[in-house]
Length: 587
Image (cartoon, rainbow, N blue to C red; front, side, top):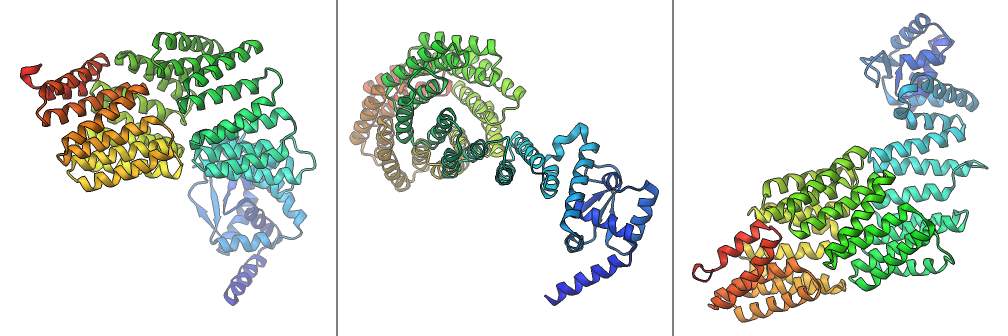
């Protein structure tokens, strides 16, 4: 404590050696900050430049300031305090608070004047000065702009910080142009982006205390539903949707949004008939309202569902209609989502060249509109198309690009999915060490964000890798973990993965009868759930077990069925595997 007092006294002695005008310049500099650009200082101080430079020379002689080579914009003279304690001592020592307020306001006005063409780079600085100058309306405006700017740059922590400061200012203003619920909603959306789902929901439930009307309340609940969807809490989201939807006594945009979300969740839960009803009702509401955006959404949803159900002509009809509407509206973000599904449709038909062409068009749109949030998904899909095509080098390039962008955007659940894709591709390339590293990362991220689907897939793939390495014990450990995870997720498909991994383990143990039994169970589950690709890969696995048992004719029957599927879908790696596994004399 004594040393601090000695330093403060030393600073004060140096300050009071200066004349009153030099002290004033020093004090204005302390309000500007650690670095003091000459251009800004001269705009605030009411002296000509030569006089200001004379006073600066006197300040430098006291060693309170030192000169920097350039200011923060990279040009012009700039000075800084030789120690941060010096700056804080001078700032705290400025006379009455009202004088300090005046300095902050003058500095803010000078910054606005000097940076007219690049004001977006100064939003946070201006907000801080106007807040300390007690110009709360202006400070609020700049904090909101600073938050939007940070959001564009995917600086999530800064986005949240700026919105939180804006929230504090709303409380200071008797009449605010911005509702607290809107700011809380923005904070919640940012938390959702980085996978902080509990924090996101907390902010949204807080926002409900400040809504001004029923419509705004419904829109907050739509955001809560979106967070629950990303979290994988489908049943909880569905419960809210059904309750809120019933409160709409006529067709509204909000009702349409509830129906669209309801159908999406029912589709994820594989309750396809109910999903179809929800999407058809969404379309009816949209047409009643004559709302093109909602009509496009309904056609998109109906097309996506039709792909899953294997009704590919119907899917194409709906998706082409959604594409036409969204092109007409110049709604590039939603248009790219429709193109993404059209590309998936072509991949499903086995036309990988057309699929890749559309996926790349999607990526170009996201690049054009600066949508970094969804770009990882597109590059991941391009990677999957190349993987099916058998071009592992191009697949890896796009998966890595997707991974790098997802790291920048901080979207954990998406990064988890991409990590799994990287794990798959390295497994295909035979690099089991890297495959294991990415699959473990994907599993960890999936656990943190409660994405059980991705955790299940990671455990299945890790089990397959351990078997490839010959470690049956670790394979069994992962089977037990997979069994536990899949029992939490009420989805029959995952029982198929359990049986498939169990079949592979039994084959490694030489228990071929049990291996064949498990693979047949898996095939039956995949067939009942329209999981045709997984059904085909399991037929290949069954063929291998039958071949080891010496049942070559039955083995060939299953291998040829798998081969027919892979040839139809143009999946070259699997075509090669099947042909290699079929005995030459039985081809």
